[in-house]
Every structure is written in C-alpha cells, then in structure tokens.
Length: 370
Image (cartoon, rainbow, N blue to C red; front, side):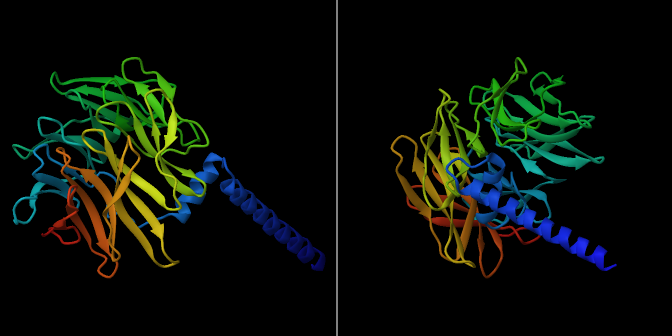
C-alpha cells in the first residue's frame, strides 16, 4: 500500500509540474512579439474583459430617418423609441428578437427569432410596423441585408454542414448553396454587395475570409500574427477595420483594398467595437482601461482614418460605455452604458459635434421606460 501511495504521489507531482510548464509556455508565447494565434486570443481576452452586455450582438439599430431606434427590451421583445420626443418606447413586435441587422434604404430590417424549435429570420417594416417570416428547414445562424439591393444572406446549419442561402426579396427566390468544402460564418457584407467577410469554421485560427456569393469561392484575407475580431467593412469601399491582440493589448488595424494591414492604434489600453461613420472617414470605438484591480473604464473615442487623429467623445468616471452605433446621417452615436452603483443598462445617444449625451431608454425595466 505504501508503494502504491508513493507512486500516486509521484505521478500527481509530475502532472502538476507539467501543467505549470505548459502554462509558462503559453504565457511566454503571448508576451513575445509575434504570439501564437490561440495564445494571443486567450491572453488578451481574459486580461481585457469589460462588462458583459445585456444581450450580446445586435442589441439595437437606427431607422433610416435618424429619428428612431429599434432595440430589444429586458423581455427580449422588440421596441421602438423616437429620440426627438419624450414618449416612452413602444412595443414593435411581440416576437422575441434574437439578433438585429441594419436597416435598409426602404426602412426594413432583419432579425432572427426561435419558432417551432428553430431559429428563423424575420423581416421588420418600420413604416407599417409589421413583421413577416422566411422559413427554412434548417436552423438559421445569422441573416444579413445586402448594402446595395434587396438581397438577404442567411447562414444555415444542417447537422455538421453549414450551407448558406441568398434570398432575393423582390422576386421571393431562395437560392441555397450547399458547398461541401465551405463552412462560413458571416460578419459583414462588402460594400459592393458581391460578397461577405467572415470566418472559416473549418479553420482553427481567427483569420478573416472573403466569400464570393457568385462563385462560392472562399479567400483568406488575414493570417497570423493577427487574431481578427470585431471586423467591419467600410460603407463606401472595401476597407476593413478589426481588432487584434498585439503586445499584450487589443489594438485596431486597417486592412485596405490592396490587402495591406496597418495599425490604427498602438496604446497600452484595449481598443474594441469599432464602427464606421456613414461617410467612411471616421470610426468610433471603445477604449478599455484598467485603472486598478477593481476599477475599469470604458469610453467612446472617434478616430479619423486619414489623419490618424483621435478624440474622446464620451468619458465618464462612474459609467461604462459600450456598443457604439452611428446614426445614418452621422450626427449622433447611440450606445449602451451601465452605472457602477446601479447596475442599470441604459440606451443613450451622443451628439458627435458637441458631445452632449441624452438618455433614450432604461433597458432593465419591463417594459423599458425613458
């Protein structure tokens, strides 16, 4: 029995020692100039974690007239609120909105919701405040409106396969692409409407890919040492801004139309959630800073793409800002904020010119209020 105990103790100590060595190797890999992709992601994401958003991606969108914002309430129902008056938010639809996409020029938007046990896409019409569904036999991961026409890209999941559908809303035609060697998770349409950028689900890296919807060809756009997150395409050309772990922090990078990647920020803070202005000349983003072990800050900054100059738009010591979204005319940015003491999420807008902040809705209430 003594011999068995000694053997067990030896192997336990050996296992602990090996785990310690592996941990050190991962940490060293992250600290180096060109960290391994997976290590880069683990290290930077854990060390730079801000407050968890109430719902995740797609929590609100602007309407094309710049006067209204559609958002999900605490009950996951859709609401619409006018930024110009003092009326409380009005319920837009009783259907639970899971993910919201940007509004098209005819004031329609797409969202997904569970129906009959499957996530399915719905089209919302802002003018008539009605919704209509598009049903697929497969589970829908995501649906994105094309920026140039009434075309909808729908990412599907059928068992281990990831087909996608291109839906022409004007002719009601649905073309499902079942490409055996393509498993694609979309992030954003290209500005010309000929393809999308996203991730290759068959790849273990965090690289960005381009999917041509006319040929079904998948082209890799980035490679290590970049681990691409928060990628978003310019509305006026095919330049892409994304964030990536670098030198132990998250920085913003620009992938131009020639395929060259250049850094936009290089700070000791973490930059995240970049969004293009409607004219493609500026980006708004969140800067995350850890003041102390218990105290963090998240503020909204604006960066000019050509000059590289940046300015703080919303800086508060007792609030954390997140999820900036430009209004279609570029005059306002909507965002979420949470106060340290209240732990209450609010939807707000800020004037890009003078930085004046206006609260639009309190999201924790059911139904939401001003």
